[in-house]
Length: 496
Ligand code: HEC
Image (cartoon, rainbow, N blue to C red; front, top):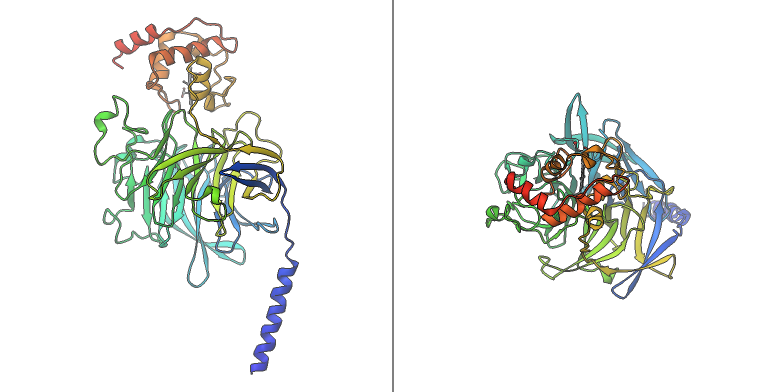
């Protein structure tokens, strides 16, 4: 008996060893080097030609899982570069910012790996956003169980999904473009929801019988928990005030009455003790996306910081936190404007960092996508100086208040730096009679906003005059100035 056991285990070992031996460890090209905090970090190119990797997750199987917005779940072996597709979801409704979005993974005690996915779905004209659980079996995701369906929309669908250290599902949802949802505690939009892995509501949720855990959010794009159980989210503001928040149960984060800090006359009356201000707000906006709380000693220069990737600002940032995790000490840009839009980030158990570009999405930056897009990159200690060297720099807010500077800060993310817009989404401002025509109608639009065009009432008279005169005189528009007196009078007559 003993002999059989020994023989069998030897054969097993032989197989296992042979398997390992055959695994072809690949050297990935180091395409750039980042210098930060006295360390050199290499940026390695792991995968090319992907299509909007929306979420990256480090799996319990020591592989890098990712979702692609059009409806695919894939898995990358970060040692060999081998890629497999675990799931294709034809029912995903993929348009602009909607599609297959957040994902997280969980390993049950019996070893089964579960994947929790969120995607938008459209039937007739009804858009919903689904949270679905799958099981991994023989390299395929099977047995879908819908845990929750909530109202979706053309935009503001969030979302990120994270499984907490104690195995609960946290889901950061968008307001579905109905701003009032965020302050309505009976709506599940504009919320952090907290569920059990079977979709039931945990008995210790702050509102008995409700999945709502925190509210007052517009459109969250990043969610992370640290080892102390503190939760953080990143969020897109309307035209100003992107946010990084420290999340608390029953916390109200202010949208739509308060954006960023409660610092304008309109916001101040809403400032009450139950409304929580962000850790950090960004105006002009940077479009913050994925976040992780980096705690590993593997890359000491990054320790105890929130790593943030951004879309509009095309950057990877290190937001150094104090020991308590409740205060931002500094913000550094590790690299920007090189890889294009960056949407997702993950950290392996060993402390390697992974990021993914989002240059094939609906709103690419000028010059993108490039032929290799989208790419999945790894950031680890550099062995050599290779590729371009990027030195991290403090994140300073540029303050050019001339029309061109204001246009680039507030308008170019949608209407594009050269005013040409995005077909069928953001109108071109070049030779557009709404720009060159009647001044009052233009002021009315820019001060009040319309549909996806945000209101810019927060800009001062001088700033509005500068940016509007700029668009009226650029790109062969050749129209007259708008003065700050004109704006002051307009605001006075219209009580703004
Ligand atoms: C978040 C994206 C976004 C930003 C930022 C933005 N716009 Fe717009 N803008 C739009 C959209 C969408 C429309 C079309 C609105 C509609 O008619 O439904 C629009 C329409 C306009 C129009 C009217 C053009 C037309 O043909 O309808 C003008 C003028 C304009 N924007 C100026 C500006 C200026 C000036 C800024 C910066 C201060 C700005 N926009 C920032 C999205 C944006």
